Image (cartoon, rainbow, N blue to C red; front, side, top):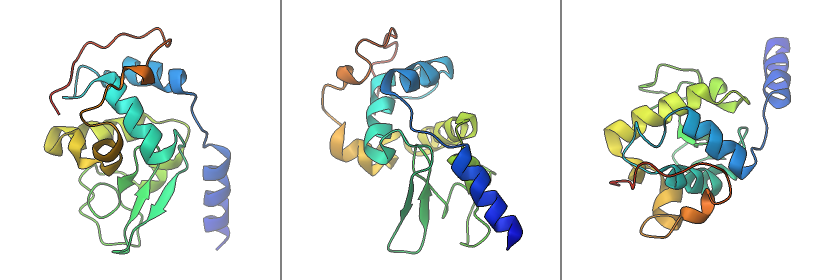
Length: 150
């Protein structure tokens, strides 16, 4: 029990809500606009509507699974929380998706995008698909290199 409380405190103290442009620059530096079939603006739009840029976001689904972190990565398929049966395709702990260091979340999001495309995210489908999302990176000092192939 003490370990669980300590882990929760660690997660709570190391999570944050990104500013839009800070996230755009972070995703740009990680190559999200060139290593996936989606534009940088699509990724920023997706994270806005999935987690409101919050690295600590959790969503409990009707099927008993949970979505974790800034990209809302699901524990049924992509990460393991040690409680819910998981394929753990990204081979990571779901707790790694709840920290201010989003490098593992980005890495896993790239795997998901490679396998299923950005359409795997409901937030993108409902709020970003077929829309002008350029405002999500406007004024951030980043340029879109990939128009996206969603």
